[in-house]
Image 1 (cartoon, rainbow, N blue to C red):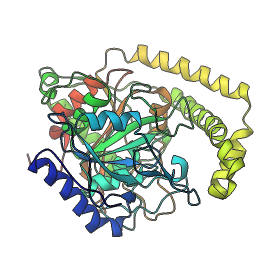
Image 2 (cartoon, rainbow, N blue to C red; image 1 turned 180 degrees about the horizontal axis):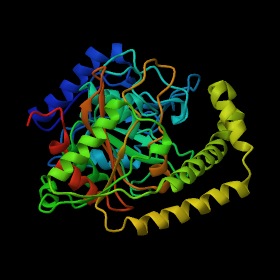
Image 3 (cartoon, rainbow, N blue to C red; image 1 turned 90 degrees about the horizontal axis):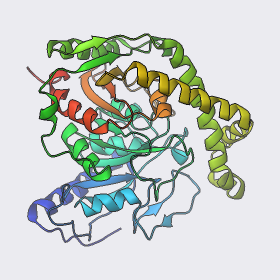
Length: 415
């Protein structure tokens, strides 16, 4: 684990050193990392947009010189020779990888050992549990995660950090475990929208200069509010967070519409379940058959059930997916962004599950960009917030709106 650090400047060296010290101090309790460096020998790229930013990487994404275990308990560590495409881009921009974070097994349902930094007896969410917790605890400035259902937005909500899931296909997946080919998307966690925007500028080649959110603030947005009430009951805290967000946006002059799309929501939830199970089963099948001891019994059962889904059923759900996506894109064409819940409420107690992703799955299926914005705290003092969603390939605009307006909807900030 031990390496030698040679950052370009004292400031960059201090940021990386602070991260390594924070990991040493806090990770014993939180267990966010499956592997971390004791020192870092890489020299950050001089003058890069992310110069000196310490970051962590979900343990299904490769980092040269670090092992990848995919969250599998019996999987022998595989020391990687090359960076994933995303990690290489971040290094080129000056960011410094300091470790690999805990993931649910194969980024699916069997949780890891990570605890919520705000209340360690509660889940941090998943499957990108370690990444969200590491950022929330101040161990790193940014961490990479992935989302198939709700694995970026949900842990961001439970840990009280900014989580960003880009439009599907906008970030290269080379060097990342991909089991659900039409769903898996690389995302990231930060403590500010500005940092999320900076990472997007690098990974998505977007023209997002520092402070570019101010351009979006020159006019009031048009917003669609989708409570998705048929997905379940929100806690009082989550319901209040949604209502207060809308009220504060209206106070900023936002025009608000409330389209009735509930019938399509049911269709999308069912389609996501079929597509995810079908693709996951076939993606993991080679490992499940050749290294069965590396796969938890629950995951074996998921593979078995997924293999029972016929190809015709899968194609039918993909057809419905495309139909609804086209219908919604037309219906919401003049909307700047959608406001919807991120999670049913505060992080649930216990570490044997990662909470519900019901409010995230439809957006993962559609492939639309999403950002979680922490805005409040619930009865237990745990974070809650809201999810903003953009139309496909409107990532730059969504991030600019979030940068411009997050402070105005954040009830944790004195006004």
